[in-house]
Amino acid sequence: MFSEPLDIFFQLSDFAVAATFGSATINVIFDKEYRDAFAVAGNNPVARCKESDVPSPVGQTLTIAGTVYNIVGTEPDGRGLTLLKLALA
Image (tube, rainbow, N blue to C red; front, side):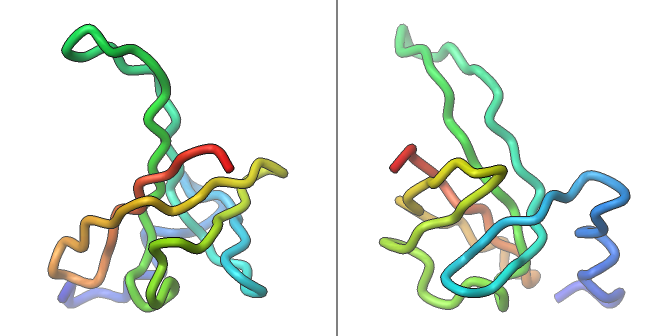
């Protein structure tokens, strides 16, 4: 775990955006940049968030700026943060 509060990384005035997970609004750092790897090109959207904000996320949806994404995988970092792998719903 980080020794400082994780909320400092998810302030809306910096890099975070508001997202809807279930009935809750959470702050995430969203990345939907275009990638071109191994001759497969496309967007690979991901969102990083506090692990405690998203209990059992796989199979759930995350809505960001009106776009609904299915959460198709996670990568917890062991320090309280997790990377959500997203696909358009």
